[in-house]
Length: 117
Image (cartoon, rainbow, N blue to C red; front, side, top):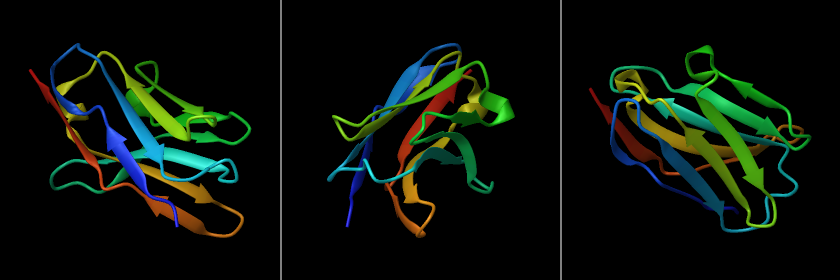
């Protein structure tokens, strides 16, 4: 069992930046997928950014060029650097790690990000 804890959220003005962190309770070296998802009120949860064990990154079109995902295996942590934030980025952000070859997956509890206009 792996527990994920997100941090770094909060309230920021439009145009500002936040850096989210997701720390795992155990080693996540064997997990080949890590992602950040978000869910805004009244909307479905969406994948915002993902990184594979090989370092391949993917981003939702709405955040390309503004968000950057990275991982630090030594610290068992995955990050989401968010720049040029917009009010439409307001949502609860969730960290997710998975072994896509087995289906084993874990989710964090989520952290609120609010961008004021």
